[in-house]
Length: 178
Image (tube, rainbow, N blue to C red; front, side, top):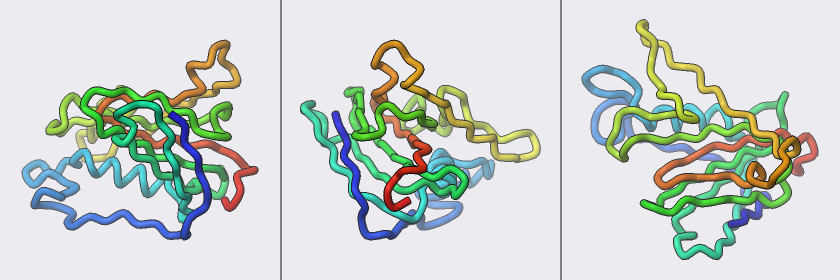
């Protein structure tokens, strides 16, 4: 699967109905612990900048329509480049994604998984996200992948397992429009 990216209409939105309560709450109504969506919003705010790009997904897989892709400039002036959000909606298909023009660049991965779609526990790069005893939000530390240092090509492609999503940040001072 290949993704092509180009500049769009320079707008950004992340919409939620409520902070707590209902089916859209960012916090658990009983424990006030963050729901899994809280971490999605937090990563979006930290990583996705205001310049938005059109993304085109090319796939030879039958399930290719179940991969969603979004791209923005990084939300960091000190680390200019591109952040891509990939969402795998498939129940069983694992996607291998090659990002056009960025496949050989070093990237930071923030891949979110869970044991089930109804679980209150979410994992960032395999580590469970839990607040501290005094309620502090855990650090959201990405995994650095540098395909240029690898012997094979497996690190050039991004792997996204079923029912997972990930933010992939590429530092690229030469990124146009960022």
